[in-house]
Amino acid sequence: MRLRSKKWAKPFISSHPELVIENDQAGQLRGRWQARFKNDHPIYLEIGSGKGQFILENALAYPEINFIGLELQPTAVAIASKNALEKDPDITNLKLIYGDGADVSHYFADGEIAGIFLNHSDPWPKAKHEKRRLTAANFLSSYARILQSKGTLEFKTDNFGLFQYSLSSFKDAGLNWSAEDISYDLHHELAKHPHNIESEYEQKFAEMHQPEYWVKASFPS
Image (cartoon, rainbow, N blue to C red):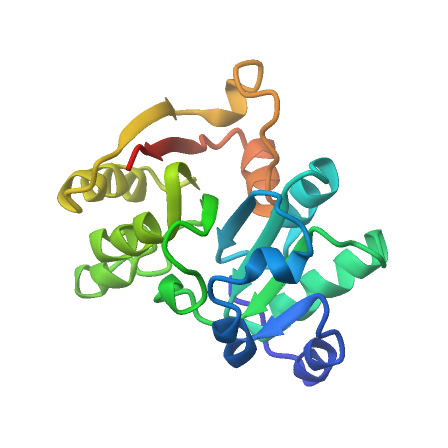
């Protein structure tokens, strides 16, 4: 369910420019994100980061990696930044972009990103909206451009139809890729995936014993 917009969200975003980078400024950082982080650590990106639980927990768990969350909904970005500052006011390996992920090459140069996470259900279920899905072939081609050689894309969803669609999209995109791992019920295979960090929605799905489908793809070149 989409968050309702809150009046305090945009002012809160603008008041924390070190953590939250707004659309225009984020575009100017294309190719210079490691300089913004002030280190040469690999960068992982989550597209559609929502309220930021997944990307924040990863940043706290892996300080040797830089993480970026990209989200269009201002209230979600504000909540994500508020939560991050409460967890660690001096966090240095996390940035949040308040912007549109429709064309990630606006924010990132070719080969700038080590890995991409997608976590979502299906906000565009109708056939006429097919090209707006985050795993549509045109989106996958954009992701492949910004990924490093041997970069990875991880996609998780509770929607089996979307999962099947996404696997087909990988083929339709005509990309050089391979599936490193596929799970048809991630919640019940956690022994196989001990480092899986669940989003807020995934935790709810797990409590309902609802399967979570997952694929990790690698792009050799």
